[in-house]
Image (tube, rainbow, N blue to C red):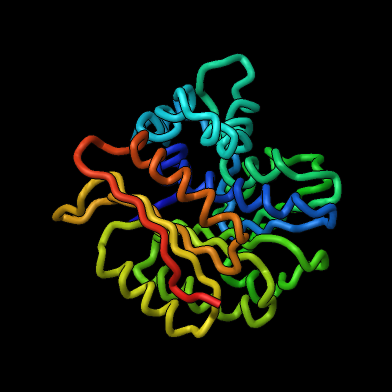
Length: 282
């Protein structure tokens, strides 16, 4: 599948992905020490939901469109606040027109001592990304293959932070490449936090991916998944997953609060499921 961000901005997978992202960043902010976020497939950073690309699919309507003004419990609203605040910051006049991708959501949460490295290979997207962060000294935008960067940009000088790996899945070997890149990165920076997003379309591909992760020998791997509908033939995107290596100790509990709510909000009306389990423990 081709999962270039611009066509799927704000859909159900983005909602789950970015919810997990802000909970990880909130944890990193507990300490005053600076941290760095490395976004390996950053996209353009900001998306017009009424524009040609996102408007063509309209996926945001059943994603952030359902959550943005939803009446939520106090506990859920508190946990989702950093995410919804980042979206609101792009729509100060109300309504919902612009959607921030992971670089802008991250930037919205950075303190003065923190830094973001936004990496993008697509030549058109990287220019748009540079425009969105023009003059921002806390953000470095680099035209580079994010997979290669995992061998050259780690560890960051801050020795704290997150590597977000969110590829477009344009190639059939993307799952294998993600595992091999994680192995390489983890050897260079074993104490880093890693968040790896993946689409759930073909259950066999996902099962093979999890088997490959188990075989790496890397410890502390948490898996978070949400499926908004049952699998179908021919296969279509029916779920979203995130692998978190060295997850914050609070993340599992927080997502046990949030995933059932997101499953209810984002379900397509047939069957939704969520799950949390450990691919590898301590």
